[in-house]
Every structure is written in structure tokens, then in C-alpha cells.
Length: 157
Image (cartoon, rainbow, N blue to C red; front, top):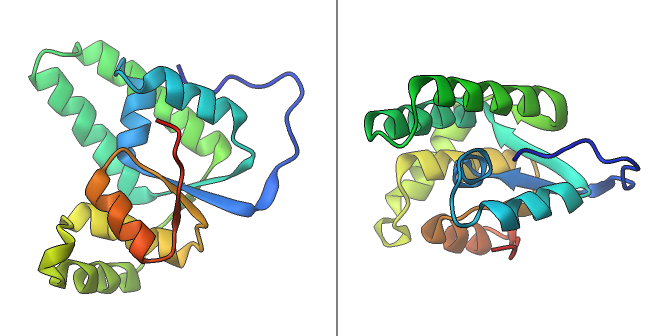
């Protein structure tokens, strides 16, 4: 379900930094309709994958919600979290949060018309600071706001 190690890895595109949103991580981990398409994208992506440490919290929360809803057992959620952890530690640039990210997220949220929630605004703030050239998300509101901020969207689903 998560990216297998390719036999001959393509050359990384050092100019392409792809911020990966939690909606994508969860779809890659859990069996969701977009999972197969996202898996193909992940296997073919040559850019540097980027996500924030906030993603670690949100993935844990999303998996716990799935347990409470009866969509996953506690053991399944633990196994998926361990997969996510191994992937992030191995292949993804995990960006720590900075005070400036909270300030930027607040500025983004002040625009009521943006429709942004705090967590998504925080992701966008980190993506900007990390100089992400692209964003992969399943969240339409986040996608619209990323485009307005000059971050190119991936159209893989």
C-alpha cells in the first residue's frame, strides 16, 4: 500500500518539492477509493516529498477516528501508523513547525472567504516555508488556497 522500493529508482527531481497533505497519507494507508491512483503516483514521483510534523499528529488522530467508527481495529491502526512512521522517517522530508508557521496560518485563516480550517492553514504555511513547488491533497478548499498562494497542484486523482 505504501511505496515499495523500486528496483531502479528514477533520478530525483531536486527542484520539485511536493508537500503531501494528510488526506493523501490516509488514503495511501487505508483502503479508500483514491488509494490505487495515489499509490501509482507515489511509485512514480521523482520529487522530494515534504510534510510537516503536524501530519504525524493528524495521521494518528485520523486513524484513531477510524478505530472509534469501527472502520479499523486497534491493531490495524497501529500497523498503519507504523507504516506511516517508517515511510516518513525513510523517504519524506519531515519539516518541524516554527512559530512563524502559526503566525502565517492565522493570517490565512483571517480571510473568512478562504474557507480554511486551522490545520489546513498550518499545512499551507509549512509548505510555503519549505518552498514546496507542488501540493498533493484531496481537500478541495486546501487545493484552491494553495493555488492562490502559488503552489502547483498535482492532478493525480
